[in-house]
Image (cartoon, rainbow, N blue to C red; front, top):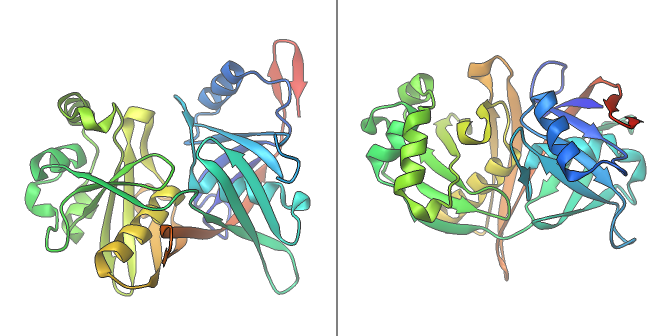
Length: 294
């Protein structure tokens, strides 16, 4: 089944494919299916290892398995809404246990979900302006440094490099694959991975773009795991106890997306969540060498 995530209408938001019963599909077949579908992520649902949980969920990009991601969890929660207990689902993932809370409209129909990042915020290394700007295809002056330098952050999923940019830089940005490759080669602390999340202030909210060409995603329409990182990082910088931010992403791609992110300080660190709507689009089956998989 495919759904558009972080939107209230078809053909907006971020596309996701979900295999609701992936029993019998090998890891190599999962990767092949994700590559074949050519979406930013595809999820495969398996029985949980602990029966108290809802399911074990594996998330694949076009090129690799991911420990956690935002829009795949929101979308998978939407697809598996009939398995919820008291409006909640618990997904076992590489990054840890992910809790998904369903959202409903006034009629009781499921419209989307809220997902908590599986781990507290971790603030990592900063990157030089020239490297970050080259990867984003912008001039160094397009990066705003009044509050922070380009900074790597994580909360259990893929680490992201967060850049605050000017309005002009946001519009002009385009990932430079050669610069991404050089930066990863010259910066061993990145562990061979690099994704950029550009943001700017836009009235009371935020505008964002995400580039991850090394993982096969030239640009992402909506990045829930980056939204939790940004919320947690902005709270970290502000010193406040809690905060909430509305983020618009995907406009430049023609797939406008709307994400609601929150963060709060806890005894275990800064924890963040992201919420958004979902719309079902397609339903079908995949043909594998020895089976038809519904």
